[in-house]
Image (cartoon, rainbow, N blue to C red; front, side):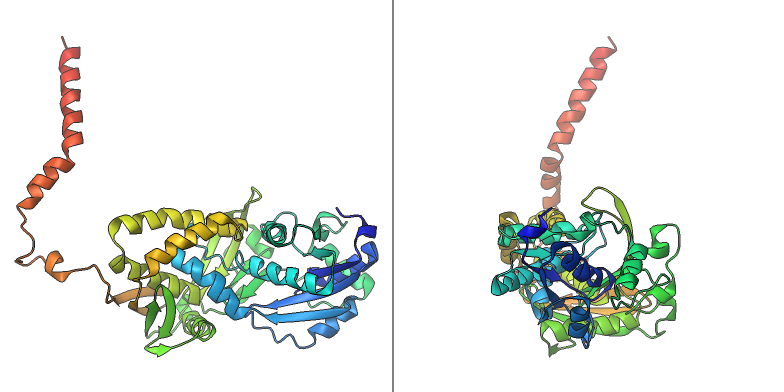
Length: 410
């Protein structure tokens, strides 16, 4: 913990929600320092209207708002997509890589303002504190770090609401609306409330940008996703930039109930947590990308890439974005993605993402070789020699076992 006298000016990662609104006032009260608020627009759908007035009403001297939506997709989400990274089989890492991009700009503003500290509103139980602070350490190890949730007397959101009421801090949350949410263009997460019991079915009123599959249209939507070097670039033949493409897929995917996941995950700090995620566009792109790789990548590269993908997902989840290992893995991924041009066609129907076709000018799939009909390119008799060689270790092992069993009977 930094001594209050050591901090003169701090840049706070500020969302305008309950926690960070309270933190502005708490910092001024306990550190007697200037507080500059920074809000990252990551495509969360907020208008940000009135946010500056709200920040100043809590005690901030100024507010920076930066639109990082395209940067989030281009430099973080799409590299993770190309790597095939999925944490614990379901989670497409929307919050995980949103923290490094936010923290990197927070550091930039701290330098611009001559601040000597940065602060965040992450709790001491979660992963986000690690993601923010590893980025601070990688980019600005000289800055002091203030994490109020690890210092103050506030134990939960009800305490925070009481603190806000006592200090006249304007907040929108109430004791009946206590979900912890994180939203950006890639996904929205829900935690807290009844979700703390993993046996309880999530309340349908909680969902924000997706229909329940049972309420989705009875007629499927057919779409085609185009890729260039593993980057998604088009929808139904129309070229689109990253933001327009993901927004379009979120809309159509959400309408058809695609991309909802319910996950009990292993947090980095050692505990399990239960969260519900809505990630329609991300789910569609992840499904399509894997299907294109299936026809473009050779067997050994595809299988090894799957091994790397799990490690890549762990690095991102743990907040280790700014590391040599992640950069080295990106170099491998870049090589695998050079031939990843093509299209994937799919139907979206009541929560399902059904692939109906895939094609690429670099496809390794050959109908001439794969056909069950008579062909001129594959001599089936060749398989006998291959099987004999492939089975040789098994044959040697079996013969040795027989010999040992016979000798043991004597």
